[in-house]
Image (tube, rainbow, N blue to C red; front, top):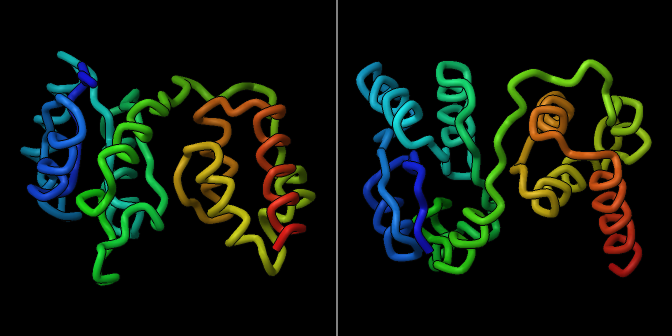
Length: 188
């Protein structure tokens, strides 16, 4: 599998894992204190070939993703769930621990954010509440599962609404994912 865009990862081990799974070039941020020079390189890469941000499913990874997204509009995003990124010894979470197949699958499900958010919200905050994704004791676990099903990553309650709009998730996709979560919970 060949990837045209340049993939932004956190470190050398992530680059090794990506290149083991697919044919791609990477830019490493070398941690969450992303430098101006690295941001300039990512901007240049975005202009020349496009960029896919593929950071770890943890706080530093989400922070890097947010910084890049704010500074360089239009970058694409690939996500993996935390469960797919846990080290064999259970100590550590990162893209470098994911299987080649999981990495390929995440890169097949890349999202490009909408340039502008839609004027009308297809999915409202009330829909999120009705789906028990915010303001409910099981909301966090349901959001994690929704992020896995829709391949949009893990979010908190505030981020979820924005990400659904940004990635242009339709109400139908949202409703199908919520129905799947409900079925899974009933079978537990």
